[in-house]
Length: 97
Image (spheres, rainbow, N blue to C red):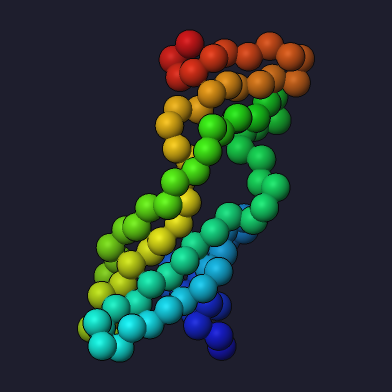
């Protein structure tokens, strides 16, 4: 089993999420797990989709892996969701609109 597959199973990730890379720094006793979402994933529901303005990298501390500090690294939607576009062309701007 590859390291990426091991962490996908350990974290309980399912499509569209996957582990892209795992890096280990033995001197710093640190493991970094990079989690990504499959390209082309559409966020929303059957009636419409979210338009996301951009992404920013974030890091989260996870439980240690065999006494190595473990960090989860991934990209999150940055800022507010700009528009909810419905199939019929109608949509609300921003949250709470």
